Length: 451
Image (cartoon, rainbow, N blue to C red; front, side):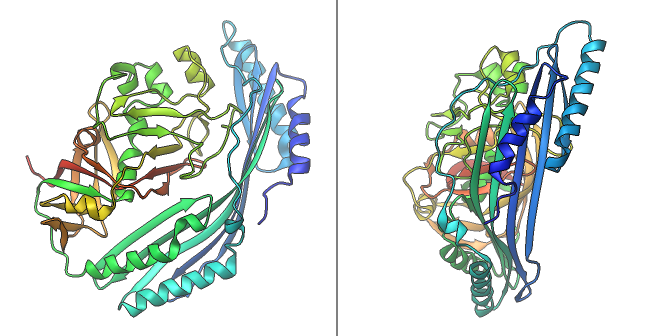
């Protein structure tokens, strides 16, 4: 597997650039990824891709005022450092006094298992064979399959003029599939550092079975339902927790759960959610883009509101230490981001969760979800793909997708069962971001225009 930038020349080059004169302090981060993806549809592999991306972000500080610049190539680093320093000097000159920006101090990062040989072996031949077997299985069921299998090397390096010098490489494996049989559809996605953890063959078989079972689906009547949310649906809801006040910026502004309800119970005692980049689930990594070691941040512990994720700036505003959640996304200002949300698994299989429901609904996933009310934790969206009524503890008639508007917090307060099998999904526009969750069961979830 290809590494985006040769580590032997990368770190010395970053250290040299970070020591350049013209600023009081300099921080440089490399975000690199070399990915290989096998996309398939229509009975063939139609779009194989090998993509290498590198972005160097530079932050220069003068009298406590920070400015940023970026480049896509190592050869452009000196110019980016000079530009950031020039901007920082201009900011300091125009300011009425010193600023408060800082860089990270050297600290040990957690040791994590980030490289998996089985992912290195998940090469183009293995992926093409898996794609062929997947399409053949769907065709044998009378349908078709479309999706992607991929592997990548993620590379993160952070160096600053205070002596921080961190570098890591990590493997990444991903699989996604939409199976369609007549009007029945089912969707699967998972990602992990280890390709074997995807359990791709079994996941494909289940997805095709669910598409077959989804034929003849009818409309879902408006109402409030006991729901069993599959891992994808559960993870989609949990991805909104940061917006409810678990961001350091929101907490510092006095907005949301951490600022106003810390220590209060807002969810079932079965709900334990943390932002945990040391977890084996999702995409663990040891430090953030400012070079701060990742901390495990409890968001909900036994349903009690915990802490916020922070970067250096938001931690300073809160009078605390950074939790290691600095992030810079495309076309967005820098901010702390909960990039590794994990719902702790429980003891139950999905079948056991379903067996505990007399009448209700199984939801495979949600899409087009949007925030409606940050304080109440209300979102809106649509259910999609493998969704079924539950009758007498068993999956019954398939149903089409339906609009919902409901409070995530209200649902979490009713959770009385959590599954044991965790799956992960990427977070849109978050570098190395994932939400990992098992299935869960809750009550009173509102679909349609029910009062």
